[in-house]
Length: 223
Ligand code: AMP
Image (cartoon, rainbow, N blue to C red; front, side):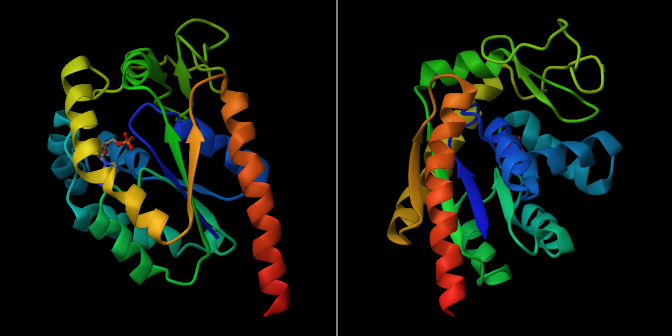
């Protein structure tokens, strides 16, 4: 089974993806995290991607498709996986079906008001060591500026600044939003209200996911 997290930057895909991973045991694959790791390590791919990321633009389809293909071939993805930040456009969605056409699919589109998104992105801090996500508005660390999990100093993402946030939102409206219709047509689309406490939003996702998991298992047993 494949769980796709859609939604604009800052809507909580990463946080909700981590919660789904913890509760249901599927690995979470974030193209943004994979790219940031490549940038941090200074790999040739990372150097190429960094230019686009720092401007809030999408990295080339070839780069992300290659990363995703390699990752979902891993044995830990056999029972299912969660995609955070992929696909970002129609070409990527179509390519995903070519790479892995057999998985049952479920899409959660986390919706939020644009003003709230901007506030959230500006208040976001991440842990450069373990990737934990914090936010001074909705998810504060226990000790200011420090990761609860590994005690590392939290940092602000390079692209969480007002100029780049504006461009990322523009790119989302121009390219990624088209996926709503794409997945509506496939009848795998679920809209999730993204405002409210993190656990409240997670509860909304679980309500749909639990029902679908039962259905998928019944379908499989019938085969
Ligand atoms: P994210 O962490 O998902 O917000 O992604 C951060 C940045 O990484 C994006 O603004 C893009 O530059 C790049 N990126 C992440 N995922 C993709 C993707 N599927 N396609 C193209 N670029 C991506």
